Length: 120
Image (cartoon, rainbow, N blue to C red; front, side, top):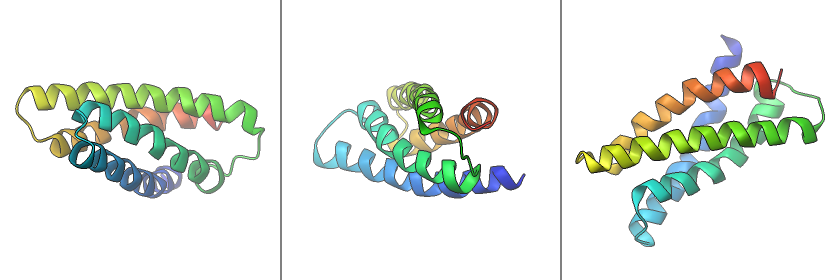
């Protein structure tokens, strides 16, 4: 449970980064919400990697082993999020509300993968 709480704390910072990128992409650049979600996820993943490596899991292994695993996991989470946002927008849901649903789904998926594979 301690790891999940730390993972959620790091995730809050990474998610704030993700949402800032998403809103900037949609509102300032005029991008489709699903694309802004994907770009935000990629940037937020870099924040999450650093925090999870050192704070959540205290991982001391080689970065060259954990970083590609984390990126693969983040990509999977980003693709899931993009699909959820695209579907939500298509159904008439505001893109930020759809992103909240996507964030929760990705949180559960990526925590399980990161704990058992990336930072084991």
